[in-house]
Image (cartoon, rainbow, N blue to C red; front, side, top):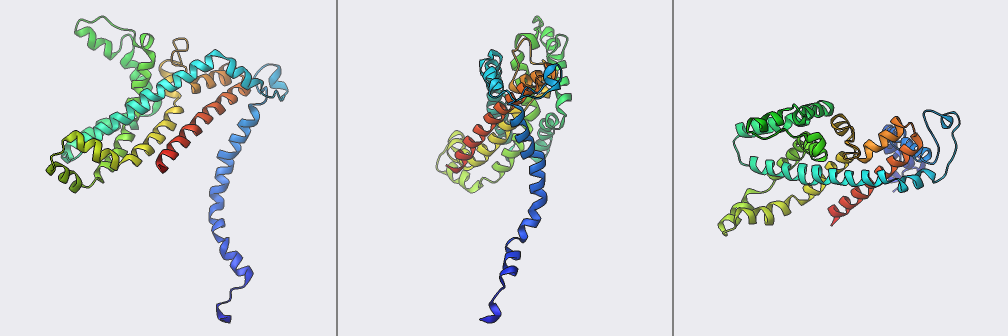
Length: 296
């Protein structure tokens, strides 16, 4: 029994050896994630600015930034635009379209999968600013879309002015659908063929197989992908800013656009950080909702 005894200092060293391997990750999290959030939280209670008297002396202003934010009608418009952009491009657009493309590619020949996959991936691998310029040229007054409809005798339409939100939604769908397609393609390949074949033998239709077998089988993947796409879409800035600048007026002003305008156009960094925390709060609430859905 004496040979099995381990001294207390040796036992403590063994119990905490794993901590040494986590120290680099913990340090990175503290420096690049926790510290910026705490600093942003502090600045949201100040009058931090880039110009003017506030830039000379930092003052604690309490909840005035938040009071002003919830009284600002543009904030309500930005929240609404953010939700419309989120539902249109992430929930309905990327999620549904990505799933349909992956479903259509299932059991197809490799050549077909490679061609369709390459076409869809082209939008995803294209940098966001390049994607914005391409779609701006497509929807512009003298763009490709107007050239096509003019060829069929239809009068040109000022798409970026008439339906600006629709244009940025379609642009984000084209830019991000490939991610959902790849996720769903991997999930659909894991659905056992034996279950689907047995359902066919029992007389099940394709829609019954889809809604009663395929979708329930990959529901965790659907929820996970929805969470990732939602968080990515909440932070979309360059695509909208390059195409419309948040206009015309506030028609496409989402929370990231409004935050940027307040912080770096109007130079009110304190107010801009308060808006960024509102955006962070929305992301946290949606993440908790998706995590709870995964547990259920």
